[in-house]
Image 1 (cartoon, helix red, strand yellow):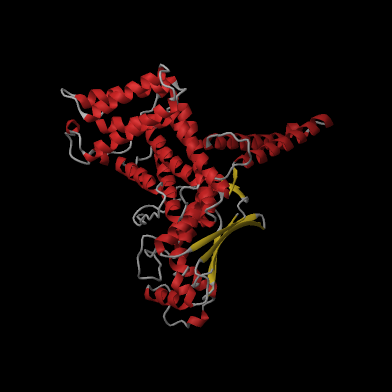
Image 2: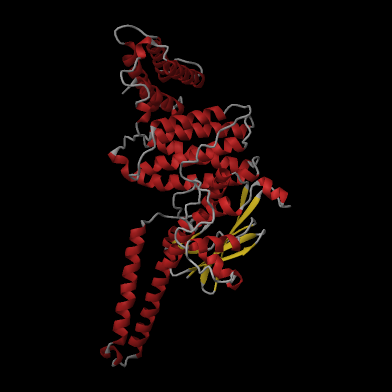
Length: 516
């Protein structure tokens, strides 16, 4: 292990250590001695001497030879931080690295997974996702009210819990990022740092990276070590009490919130069941109902005259159907989790498009099959991106037209006629019939000889769902390539649903998903 890696591991171990944790202190001392051996070489070095002194202090804490163990441990932490700075500036002659500068930073983040902890890590993947979802929902609310102490505590506890479990599982990259966020949020809780929009963005970006790190445990590709180091550095800078600015650098990256979101929990007491187990259970129940129906319709059963047998058969049929309904309900989830993540998508897409956007959520407790929720995630993201890029005007345009500076998107869900309706409405410029018809005529989609007045509004608006159709010549990372609304139509129709579009020029547009 390189000296830099030793120092990173040291910093994480020191952050988790406490005077009463003898096992952790001994492990920290051994890490310090590892740095000492690596840094000393044939001749003493400043780094080696610092590590040796810190190891001696830890040993004195273990042996209870210091009066204030916490103060002594904090001095060790500060010494490790000084050593990290010393190493990063290259001031120690014995710390030359043989590899090319920056080569290690380009390597992907790696985890040393303990085989004995695989089952616990699998549980952590689900729990970590839940904590991140809670943190992101709270951060969304803090965008409206940065002083909400309850939401700040929620975000703090989420990272604190992730850090603790990751430390137990030896998932050091996750622990490092969570610890940095926890420290920043502790400064916010104490009032020493204000959670302005720039710092809010940093924490949201940290949530994205944390989600990526957790996904590595499921076999996904790993973020780079440089990306993690840069993120931690941004968080450290955000801990400063003065004004803090961070550039928007996500233009070429994925939209925040892009990972498919699962549904919300059904109650305070929950258990995790693999989706394939639910599918198998449902298949068995369906088979049970089918077999029971065959039995009821058989001639032998019909000839049985005993009323008790007939009542028992009717009762067993009712029970089989009840089991079927219960099995189907196990796959039902609320839209809460999905809607909250889409709110982050809207905020991020608005920033990238140069718009100020607020997303109102209605009907978050509406339930859908888990598979349907996963299938509608991409369509809803496309719809939100289009609304932010094409529907909502810039703040200057809105003010000039007498509207509020901040555009409003409303995402609502409700039950209707035995199905579920999901609507996305904006108060933007609306759809232009003229531009749609002109583009459609240029592409040969409609006859140029036909009078535009003959087209009904719905017929015109449905044209935007044709593959490759776009009314704009401006291509951005959000839209403009003609890919989006056709995907929405295909995915919803694959579910047996339909898409409706309404628009009022200058007042906005509404896209309605009708789900069975």
